Length: 221
Image (tube, rainbow, N blue to C red; front, side, top):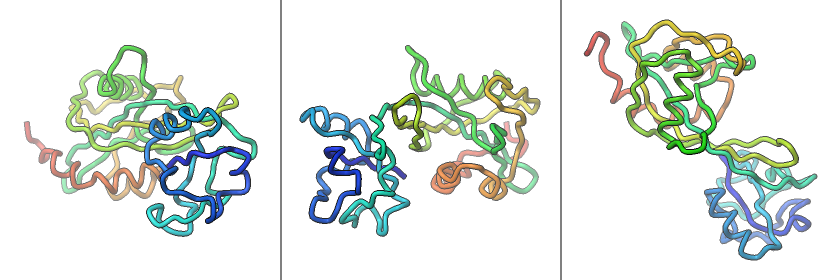
């Protein structure tokens, strides 16, 4: 999970020691941190990987260098918004989750927001495109995930909004130009073990009850 800290870059290159750390500068959402940094004009948004903290973020008293992802060298942050869909159905005995195989890892269909569309529309479009289908029903909003990566001299902070979806279709055409080579149903338990991104494993664990509550029995409808 990412949090965001606002401070001067030169004072953060070796981490934020206890005597400089302030929880008032720590933000859960990138947009809030960006607004705060913009007020001074001298501070930047620092991306904090909370998995690299010695204690839970609520108890953090300092930020070690290795937990700050966009310093050494400093990369200014750039926000990207995306939408995705977790498609489920009931098998004979267990709930199944539909995964895609992209860049040698099992993943969940998602993609970036296009100008003029809502996040829900984005999620539906991306799922249809990546699976090569058209009959997809968007159910409930589930949760968000945030991950980041360096790109073109910036550090991209990508927030993905996830929806529960269902489809009656069983034949899929992977979107090869997005490096998707396979689409496959897995039991929920197996999906947790094969997913190639830990943020998605944690996502499924967080929304399991919602998925089970709204996945109809086999043969329903």
